[in-house]
Amino acid sequence: MPRWRSAAVAAAVIAIAGLAGCVPEPATPVATETATPTVTVATPTPAATPTPTASETSTSVAARVPASCDELGTASSRAETVGGLTAQHADGFVRPSPPNATTKLSCNWIQEEAAAVLLIVSTATPADVNDGLQQLASEGYQCQAAQDFGAQYCMRPGDAASSEDVVVARDDVWIYLETVNVNARAWLSDIAAQIFG
Picture 1: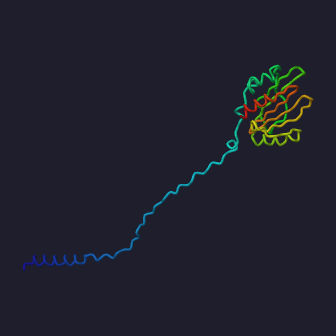
Picture 2: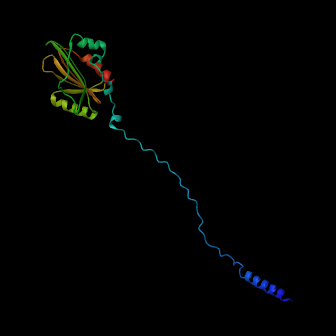
Picture 3: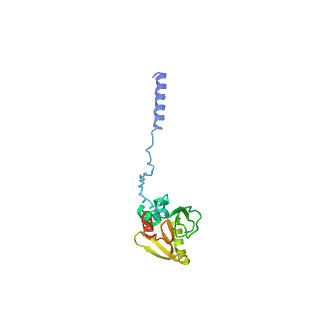
């Protein structure tokens, strides 16, 4: 055999032997973790019920207070009560009112020394109005619930024989009425119905 053929055969044998060493060994199975899919389920959380604030739990009636003394009550009851009196400047009067009160309307009518009507409408928080009502007993007022407009009606005799002081209060409004020789009860009832309705 020629030399180059024997060299080729030898090279082929070496190559085959080399390849035989490259035969892969059977693979050993590797333990792998099986991934279990994670499912996240959103559980609906009930919406929190809002806690009502003080202004929501009680009815505000302050917005119903008229802007003018000439709009109080009905035209007929107003004319019957103060139609014959003269309107006067009404600032600066100090009368029973709830703590932290704000005067919304102050009205004063007189007929010389013979007759007079003073009406002051104040606003305060319902808690302050309630505190003010509790203090009226110590000032000689007698209070009872007014069935026709759901407020507290408090009265005491005035300083003169034919005078009286009245407080009508509910929620965040306080109405003070002082009269001398004038029966203003029908008008006050109309005013209370207008505001407390």
